[in-house]
Length: 77
Length: 376
Ligand SMILES: Cc1cc2nc3c(=O)[nH]c(=O)nc-3n(C[C@H](O)[C@H](O)[C@H](O)COP(=O)(O)OP(=O)(O)OC[C@H]3O[C@@H](n4cnc5c(N)ncnc54)[C@H](O)[C@@H]3O)c2cc1C
Image (cartoon, rainbow over all chains, first blue to last red):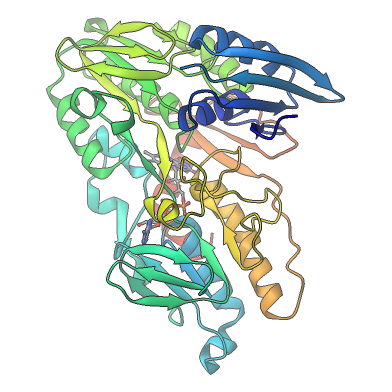
């Protein structure tokens, strides 16, 4: 994993949850930042790509590592 | 021991430690100081009721001194920054307050200025000033399209839902139900971050004809044309705009270089110590933890921080862990409420709203003052 990847650890976060944590990160970090969201909730693997598409960012990868879903996103604007 | 911030969390820690260590405080072998920039302790949940003219501002405030244990020292003033090397809190007037242990409990701040045009074009009920302005706007409202929008991150995640349902009931009671459209927007793919709450609220919204727009992160408001546009590219018209704005951590965190880009302090989710530090604890809204920013969170975290400080001061290891517990009442109109409770491992299950729970919340609004006192 590249050093510049920012981990958003949303495991066991029911509220605000992994997607809100990603939105918070995207709002506060510069364009070009790559985030890797960790989530223990299967719904995130669908919700996060959907939001990323609507918001115009880039979905780099969406994988499952044991019980944890790992979704990489690049901030484009 | 120094506690920076005299809100819910900071006041509870000070009182719990003082009560358990009162002999040491009396002898002078221990000092507990609370630094706070306001002489008044504010119970923020009252702002929701203030907007609907159900309470007045004085009902949301009491002098902080009267809530603190008599052996706790209170310094009223704004902290400029924390100097970790010197172990002092430097105040804006140039004085310093030294610490062996520091508790950061500075809370968070709504930042409407982060959404262009929002301060001019919209209302908020998250500050006393904002709630009073909204009270007047609601008083003068004669019908139209109300848009409620929610920024990320924000404290009290149930407040947007509560405000929407209370507004609906309030408009019906005022005879404006038929003349008003309520539009609720939410940043993610359902109408509340908690899935069980979203599942419960969706049919309630359908039933009450409240329109919802998901994946809507407010980005720009045009006060002249009365429109709001999301970063996802959707534009909505409004007659009255009410926002729960995005929040930031306090500037003192930024000036101290203790936080991330949003001025949230990196915190260990179990020990509540600032990451990389043995002598700084963090609680409440100020942390970067992925949990609800709520008074109840600050309260449960304060119990853990106080227990660990008492342990450390008595030669223990300070190893009590926070389990992520949160408790929230949810007002579902003007006469009924429900509640949720959850932690890192157990999701919430909202129950059917009842009048009894609403009455309990009303009673708690008056009993709140026992919470910072460390009694409830
Ligand atoms: C409208 C509304 C409704 C809400 N409803 C609920 C609810 O129903 N249930 C619930 O659990 N929560 C609710 N909340 C959220 C709750 O009020 C906060 O989450 C809670 O107050 C956080 O506690 P805290 O101790 O972290 O910070 P706060 O209580 O905000 O205290 C922070 C303190 O730090 C002080 N401070 C900050 N910076 C400095 C500085 N530089 N120098 C000195 N002092 C400083 C501030 O003056 C303040 O006294 C609501 C909030 C709002 C606005």
